[in-house]
Image (cartoon, rainbow, N blue to C red):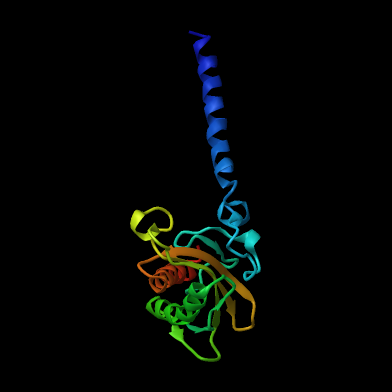
Length: 192
């Protein structure tokens, strides 16, 4: 019986070490630059300032909020979205960005302002796609239209207080933009 207790203690110690190492292992690869998303050839990384600080988000795919959620701010100004993605779909998606961002921020309780706002939101479309040929009907990754977008949030002084990178799908590219920005607005409030 005396040899059983040390053996069980040894097994317990091994299990304890294995369980404590699991969170460390899970934390690896949780930044955008370490992800498969960062390796996509058709998705430029030239709009946000801190791709290396983006981490997995709760509502949006990738987020960076150095000071946490932005619910404490009341007024917001949304600038026209730009695009560094290729093609007509990206240009069209950028035209839809401002309107949908304003819509979802209002639903989150922010008041829209044309000047003097506490928050300034800038957006970029880095990719937009419409399925070609039979892809829409045969299923798979390209079965639905989609969009990839990025949002930078600054305070009134111009200090960066948030960055988000999000991909979404919808029945149309415009619908994908709206879906993505709904999730972005939720992330802005939560700060995660």
